[in-house]
Length: 455
Image (cartoon, rainbow, N blue to C red):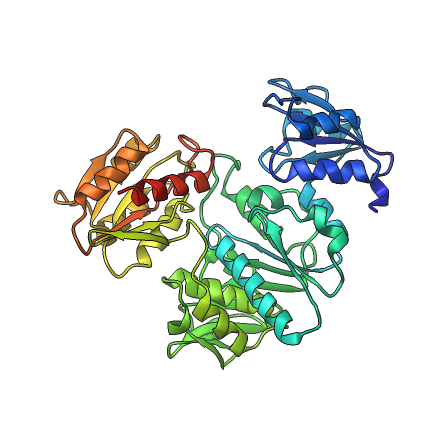
């Protein structure tokens, strides 16, 4: 029972994935609930009808933020906390919180939190797998709960958790922006320009990411190769690097690559050749995950996961081979830095499909990499003109480099197929969000796979 909610008036802003189960938790704990969303709801939907019967008040439409009231306001991650209507409500005495903050406040399990511009979903999954293997080897019934930004809200499962269990969460900058608590174990994979169409500037985005450890995390794992995370390293933190020697690093524990091995303070953990996932960035993801779980795992456990884990859907995911052409779905690549990492994962030069809605992040560095590491480029989506202009302005511009423009997504996939010859790779790595044409990156990736599987 979350006693502090009993009798409170709670406002839920945004009826998205995380806030729908939040309403049930609030009602079960005796709160009066008002739910607000910009989109209309259908009261014929049994879930909404049941909530209305239980006293939930719905305020929807263009003016859904007008007159916000209540003791506690639970913000959806996609709603900025400094909107005038929210600020006015806080000034009148309301507390601003979120589903994730409520979870952190009451979670009895050991909390592991991972954030970063790139690699956080794969790293979060790896942490979960490593802890699951460790719990199995221990044989004492520990359980691992995986969720957060990775897609599954954990708040409704609080009653299942015990102090000896593990809760592993992926956190976005949107979720972290107002967090007042940190996990027991926290990591930042890296920080590069991202979501600058939502954050006011890079400083705000960086501050949100650092919030994952800034409220008293017991163990902090940071990237010594990334300037914005390396700036936070000190003697008490765990550092990882895929380029530096231990003498060049700061940290209580140093994780690095030497002689084809990932080593922890000189102790070999796993061979990089054991890692089934391709790419230098995945070596770094393993370093992060090992650093977070050192208290519980062994090199044997790390090797078992490395040699069996084939990756997360939509992240350099092999789809199929058609007439000698291999197709890969990396729809998660919604920023230039992610597409650069995907390009660097291949020894061959792929035909790359890019485009979507941009995040106000420059494409210059990506274009240089495309000329160096891709065989051809197919452009589509809202950002097509910006990427094309950046390609033409690149210092590495080559007139013999094929650039094809497609008016819609299916035409882009068909164009890539037409360019490909036996032995080639076609890679969907958009460098942009999906919101110009799709609900999310998952829908975009599944559409790509459906098109390819229909060839």
